[in-house]
Amino acid sequence: MSRKPRALVTGGAGFIGSHLCERLVSEGYRVFCLDNLITGSPENVAHLLDRDFEFIEQDAIRPINLSEKMDEVYHLASPASPADFSRLPLEILEAGSLGTKNALVLAQAAGARFLLASTSEVYGDPLVHPQPEDYRGNVNQLGVRGVYDEAKRYAEALTMTYHRHHALDTRIARIFNTYGPRMRPDDGRVIPNFIQQALAGKPLSIYGEGTQTRSFQYVDDLTCGLIRLMKSGESHPVNLGNPQELAVREIAGIIIKLSGSKSDIIYEPLPEDDPRRRCPEISRAREVLGWEPRVPVEVGIKHTIEWFARRASLTGTRKDTGGRKKPHEDSRE
Ligand code: UDP
Image (cartoon, rainbow, N blue to C red; front, side):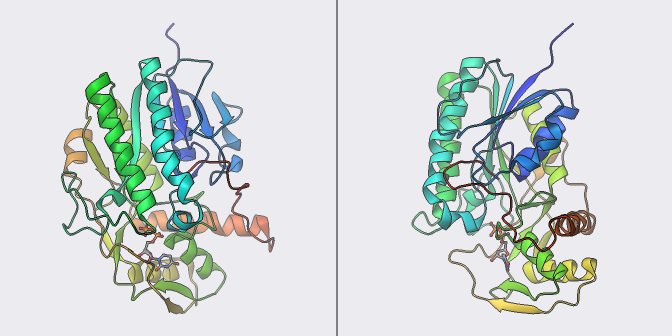
């Protein structure tokens, strides 16, 4: 009888990583989750511990030694929220550089396939719209967002180098805005902020005028895309995102409506280098993976509101810590 395939997910206790681990376990993988818990949380994977799942508390920037040989390596480890860009800038640069190198070295030693979780941030504040994979971007490497953007751009270059010079079987997913249950309540991103504000009857904080756009995919659509990409033969970057573009003020309206909230809106300053528009061109994902997002925004937002409401009722009025541990442990996305 053939053995189960084995997958390593770095950053597996984070928001996206934990959903990916869950899906891989249910697809019959033996899953190893490596996370330093800097932004991930043990709660995110607690329900997997009695399955074919192993949790390893370790920073991906340290050499990774596993007792078993992997077939697939998903490298997600890195803080990923704009609020982390100023809080954890060196950790982000190291996760993208040293962390990616360590994950590539492990994949190569095992003869495993490697998938890099890259980002729409490689396009910066894009001058081409929507963004196809061959657009090279408009990144301010000196600004606060530059640590994340450049770390991921470097990670892409390193991944392509291993592909070209070491014949490693690699994939690069450029992940656009993703939302769903297990987003960190205190990560500062627009959807958790707006949902928690709406549920608490507080005003929703729109940065700038709210005319900037994003394209939001539900996390289940993304994990499906990541697994399809890993199984594909595509070594070029592939955008994974929802081409439905919404202005931030439209998102606020949807969340107020679906939560039945009476919250107002307050306007706050726009953060530095905040991209004005972001929308993926996904014809490559459609052609190569047969993939496109399926969960309508209203449906995904409703699930996410329900998750935050359940979480708030479980934690009561306890001051929220978002499940974060001390800085200088790690993980992400
Ligand atoms: N944003 C906002 N209010 C918030 C949080 C974010 O208006 O409370 C805006 C932010 O300025 C950006 C968009 O929402 O234009 C998405 O921000 P997020 O931090 O979720 O992710 P980003 O796409 O910027 O990485």
